Image (cartoon, rainbow over all chains, first blue to last red; front, top):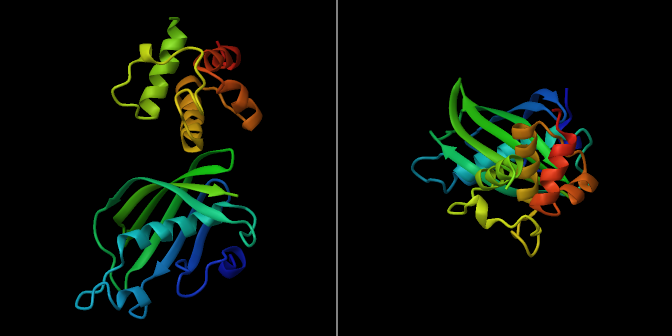
Length: 135
Length: 85
């Protein structure tokens, strides 16, 4: 069982990974995020119809991507350097158990290219390519 | 222009989405980064992946990259040297 807080520097309310289900450093990670009604951003997005902002789905993939690194990321700053071909196909709602799948496509000179998919009950909600820079 | 050099230029244009650019417009000796084509570190990663996919040649580290990315001519020579015939 992966200790999430020992690996990622993110904390409430911005830690967006609840569980790591599968992990092969440098290759592939499958993680999970359960969207609850108490998420702070749902208060205003939107008042009448809470749904997860698309950019936060990208952040979830980026955080899941952090587990591609073999070593804990404390002290090692890791930044989003680029987002390519992001597609938002359907919104995520409170109560959704989101599956975050990330696959490493390659790395060079401290930059890693990651392909990610957010899905819920087998339905793809968001796909994107992320470029992550480690300093 | 040799066949391989033309394919290298086509790969650069396609991989980096240099739309509207023709292979003939890329100078053989111009540096790929900085003053030449003005590529950045994200472009470098794209090229590394493109070179591996198209030519089956791996650029292992930054030292190899420094050598290979000096110019289109240097990159063509690097690929010719490391490619399995």
